Image (cartoon, rainbow, N blue to C red; front, side, top):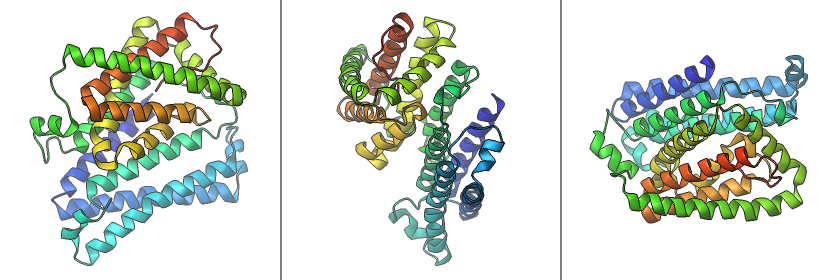
Length: 326
């Protein structure tokens, strides 16, 4: 469990550095160096794996070595390319113009690099031939920690404590005082999302039964390690808050609804199968909810949906229908 916590802490540190780099040239170049090292290490590691794919199997991991290697290489290149572009603009004395060039601002560049790393690692891990062989220790602690990191990343990512005070941060994220009306609208949207899941997921299960059942088995394995219904509700609330603050609160105003929905979908490791279409649709519904009623309602929609899915899975384990949680 200590490794994910260290990873989260390092990522949050880089986000904080990016905020300082918005106004400090020295911090900008330290940030560039960190991103260069990250991209280069990934690129070099991917090339080594491609040269000898059997290395992964020798390490005891039953993985697609070639696919894993290419995923790591692509991830490294996608980090290096925009970082080098931003550095060249800086060397030409155009630091003042960086704000007008997409994805070269320190905060946007960092968001891109961290998202690509997160998504690339999920894709790489999904190269495991048998998803059920993936061991997740203390899933509740991991999920709570991950979503706490997501929430902090959203707060720091929009400048909390560096460029914005608390009031400006909540305004930027679209947060306001919760109301009972938002909860009821969110619950209604959660039911709509559940219907979409059942309809689209059911059709995909008919067409891709084996791939869909693998994802369902992974979900069941996680749920069986939870201590009870209260943990399902806590997990639902945590994912609702953490993921919505990050994706719909911090990212969507910059990247737009559809790109955010795509990033949201591919960041869910257990659904890197035809079921990813379901997650994309759910992400789009959450994005539309955010635009129509605000981030508060999107948080409630997400939390209620995940809680319903978890409770249904716990009380009706004999259901064969694929019901993903996001």
